[in-house]
Image (cartoon, rainbow, N blue to C red; front, side, top):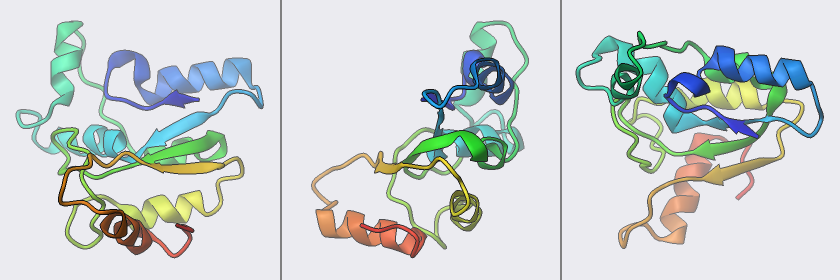
Length: 147
């Protein structure tokens, strides 16, 4: 599975080109919710965003994304779920209502994703996050998740 990130080779047009060229049941897309949030929100304040750094290294203008989950719906086979404030890749607990992630939209799209097989937590775990806290955070995202 090819995963969205925030670098020039992992922008939607590049990933789409590969998926369409090979058009194989053995190749899919790994939707990383936190990475998507960085590339979809960072344009609002590029000075705070981690995204431009990687593009500037390559002397390229930043490609800001729009609705990555919608673009890749038919190819999504796996998801990495974690949250961030839209500027840094912090791998925080999902917290609908408090964080800025579009969880309702993400889950609405995934409900009809024909190839979805797996949703994984990519939350950075520390001593304050117990399995129960993690499970409850994911249950808040959507009743569609069976944890």
